[in-house]
Length: 66
Image 1 (tube, rainbow, N blue to C red):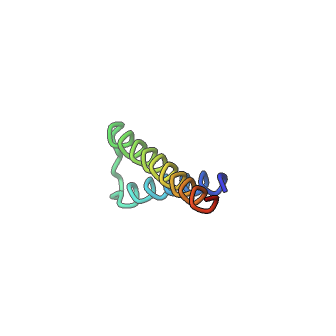
Image 2 (image 1 turned 90 degrees about the vertical axis):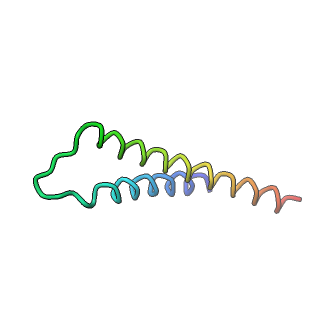
């Protein structure tokens, strides 16, 4: 189960990164600040999804083992 949680968090991170860079005008370069902002948003999204899924798994295990 944990490998699926890790894979889903990576997928969320990649999806946020893709969503952030999909509207790039032709010939336009992003500044380093913009690139770091995109990377940080992607990283934070992955972390949030990871901990949310771990919380759901913990709740599930607490309920089913009672």
